[in-house]
Length: 119
Picture (cartoon, rainbow, N blue to C red):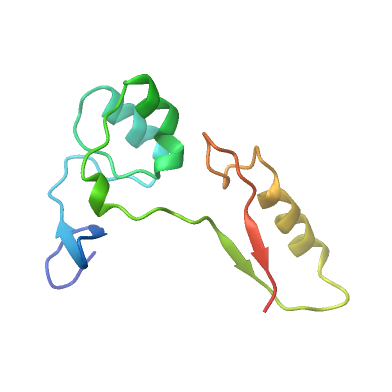
């Protein structure tokens, strides 16, 4: 919650050489993209979702994109981890998991593997 306004979440937009944050009075606030997508498909209102997650729905006409010139593209996830000769097995398993195209952390419609970088 933003202490100065009491809003749960601000929508951040960049475009036209400026950046703005908007306090949204919402009926539904969730961190579940499937729930937000379902609500948008049922006509509840606007949903702030990654474009890759809804690309097929936009292409089919089920959804329309608004404020397109104000929304930055999401380049994907980056994972920073120490460069060690003996990486812990749990970290290696996590890295391998997020690189899978079917991973829940990969964009649903595009299924691009996550990018990893070492410092």
